[in-house]
Image (tube, rainbow, N blue to C red; front, side):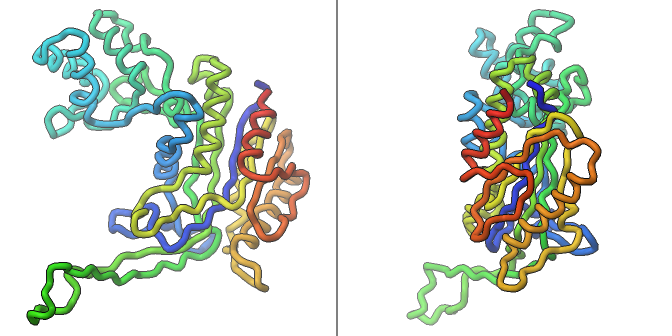
Length: 355
């Protein structure tokens, strides 16, 4: 494939919600362009992508597992199924997991979450049991999501994987307006007829905001190809799965109370053959404002495309195809960009460019 990177720019509006919270149970935020912005961490977005049903369905295989509980949930059951007694399985599993990561303070856990697909993990375990000194080289190919998002093991650096995908923290295109929800919950068993307190059974406060987010991600096609052992068909499926799942990816923080099922309303994909990847977040260094009857969705889109035009004139190399889809009430002003009628056609067009 004569493609260097696949890049994705999304604009997505969430209703009052707390899609990604911090240690104080508040929506994450940051300062950008001297203004406070709502933020969604890249880790939250990557998890939402890899766990989207469309990712595994498109790639055609199960995603990998990240867990500290590999000993009890994966290794021991596999070893027992292979014919070992529980005592033997526990001994082998303990020895093997210590080769991958340090023990946690809690028994039977590793200090970090191990991130492996079953096929790779069990192939490594079998090679380890056989006494092969090069057992760390005996894993089968990495799962598609491991190839995309990478893996780091301090105790087994030979098994580290450089991430092919780079995902930015999403930020609001406008100033953050953080608000407070005062909530109450009734006690269904209170008998008000008997004179019991008519007040709420529980009450409290919770922060939320409603924001338009700019999301950016980039996939290195050469890196992904190396991570997947030059299996071109799987590389294509992984890229397609990543693109589709990026649309479906909605972090699930407090989703039962906010139902933030609002996918992106604007998408710009870039198939780059030469030149550097281009994050367009600086389109929003000056916070966007709704004005003249035009909403934040249209103003954010205009700011993004105007910045894109300026940057394309600025960069020395821009050998790339730009593909745009939207659900805006107004047609966006885009120059030297192919417009298609929806996100599905956008993904199809990207895949055509990978021929």
